[in-house]
Image (tube, rainbow, N blue to C red; front, side):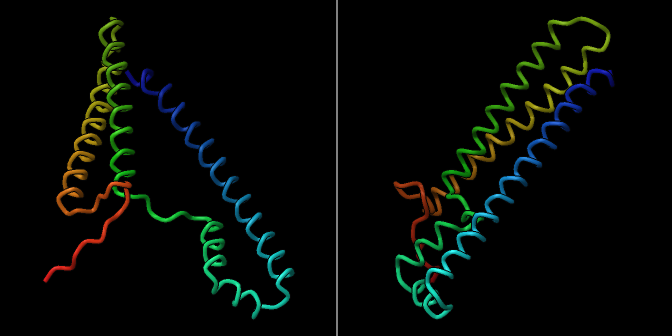
Length: 156
């Protein structure tokens, strides 16, 4: 049975390493471009006082917000949809492993069944969590028509 788990674990490890390297490289490029842009902006404006005055304007603050490296937290609706999507993918993956566990009859086919049950549990957990989050957000009036946050009245 350990041989059945080795291949998916090795693939997952390599995929995680590639994802980490690519994400780090993208962030490095973003920081590099931001530093170049900020340097050119300071040269163009001439002084720090001019830069401060520019950033106080509405256009300056919008521009600065558009160049931030880390984006603001996602909306409630986006988080619910992401959890649902991950859950559906895990459920589909688990169905594939469970089918493979039934099709192949060698002595160590239980590995597919075990991995399938684990993936099914994760998928159902994500879907249930997304459903609960959606209904809680709806009950607390955190969702609006545009998918963002609404103003929730303060408790009295």
